[in-house]
Length: 349
Ligand code: SAH
Image (cartoon, rainbow, N blue to C red; front, side, top):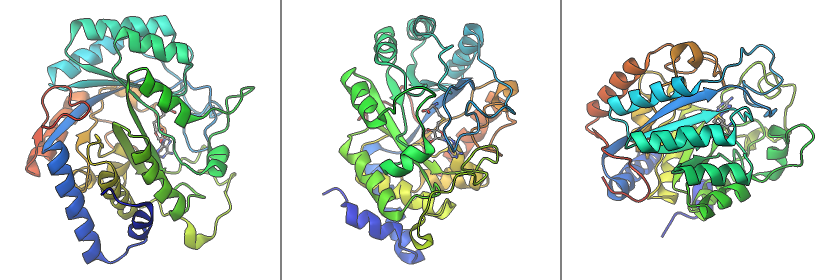
């Protein structure tokens, strides 16, 4: 029996360290039974920080004039992809702001080249692109798409995620269903501790992961960026303080563990946002409390510093090689091994 929404809510409010250790142990056991001990590596390439949206939480939103903007060339992307192959990663993840300078045909050509010349799975995380783009990229060979719904509370979502200027509001849940119809493995997720996020809505977020039958689920703490309306408190959603979810490391582990119990088969990363809250052992603790994936960064360092969705991002000044060595060492140190192959849907290690 999957965990119920009312049990999820009770666990989110649990503070007893002994009980929480039981929750974490159960999540680790369920992870081991369902997806095994392998930790799959997804090489992250942040291909553009140009964005047309004004998400109230995100540092690369269109009206942050302080950001120097970049878009990688095809050659730069292919160099990162070749590094992914050399390091033994199974997947290349191309992520960006919602940048319509990333043209449908241009990206389809790159996806096709990656699929033709490497054994990698290709994951996209490019925002709310029109159906024709999503279909063309799938036809070119893209395997997976990540689109977090950020919160399942419609009132909070409307505040933190306004529509593109001059456009109608979009429905990320509907786009996720469309991605599944197109044959993508679909990933989603939420931020933890968004101002205005209640325990009840976070419990509903986790239940929604299961209802959507997602292949991948990314959850990480909300980290305030001072150059954003939410981070500077220019926008402050009203909420009873007793109902507000903290954006803490402790809460992130609870959500990771509960997500594993709700979605035993999902691929769940131990995120960089978590590692930013605890650079010493956040990654490892995430992997020991439900997660089975990490996403080493392949973005060339001169661009990496410009992809500042939140401040003080972990691993910001490392090279791709340093990231690879560091993460593989951390995986081995906790008695797990690096996953071989693409590490896709429902594949036991
Ligand atoms: N443009 C793409 C990719 C966005 S970056 C998209 O919108 O899907 C990927 C994720 O980073 C977002 O979905 C969001 O959940 C997270 N993120 C953005 N700003 C953040 C912040 N200030 N703190 C924590 N996570 C953040």
